Length: 158
Image (cartoon, rainbow, N blue to C red; front, side):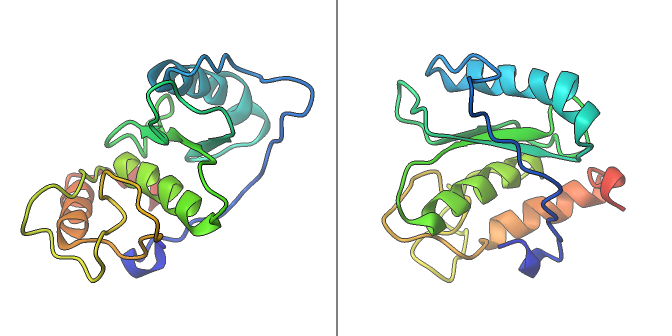
């Protein structure tokens, strides 16, 4: 999903928690994200260096949100990461949720503006989950990414 943006995503590792959850998953997505980012900084980055980490969980949030990430944090050691709930048997829908969260890390906003042209009914940064996995980035998302990179937000990725 990131190839059209000239961004190469490399999977550097996978950690599977089989015995117990390594962080508290209380069903409140802001708490879970905060706990995961602390885990990434304190434990994961020491054993598996990474620029960004994404938590994929089966634990649903209490309010039905299927993903969470902080905006513009891709090159910050403390906050470059996100979480996504494995909310569908359709892998493309879950993959687009992960891509959406990573889009926030890259500085992208939700596609709210009516002039956010999209090749599909919904693009990746649309705030709602549909029944068809989005595969394109809107004009607004591409513009947000370009602005982020112009401001140097990609300094760690060069």
